Length: 284
Image (cartoon, rainbow, N blue to C red; front, side, top):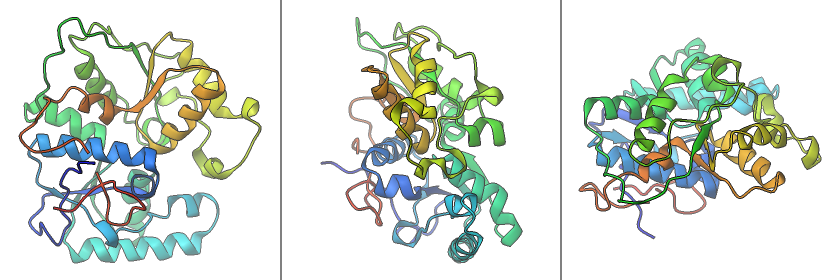
């Protein structure tokens, strides 16, 4: 498998942006595909970025939400020390839980950074012309799309315009039409069922919040459910399957990456993190 280059902070000490891969992007094979897509997009746009690789630890978000404050603070202080060592000031994260911890929880322990969600960065790269998309193939059919707003992104951090801007850019000219919006969206979104530590609880499939939320998404008639969070990716994938649907569930970055030129100058379509169990973002 081709792996797109993602230099570590040691390999690219003059980086301008740190890409925070997160636990899901490192260890979950499905979420690794999101990281691959994101690295491919960053390379295509010529972004000067780096990753921490094996020096990145869990942000501690789940530990704090589940009540293990000691573990959270242990992880947070270790990460803050690592970020200080490399002079990190700006971070992009594709996980809203990581984003929220870095942006809202870490300042209390001395960690102050500019933190953006990957959809915010992608929207800026598209608007500035740095990220260029290929024209849709003549006659190519693209499934209609609905977008599920993650709680930590839309409710907590009020980020909901950027994902839609990116998705619409990806859909333009494909014949898919505008987004098919759910009734509960943006800051009034409905949880996928993973928030507050519920990701780690077990419930009968029919009673899962993810099953109910996926039913809402499928009710729009969309053939693709877009998400902006690895927790939502897992939950909505399970929910769509529980509803007996074959609709695709994709991260916004994956949908956008499908519109990149076939052979972007910057590299290949794949990501491995140094601390991943399998290939996700390879160091340069």
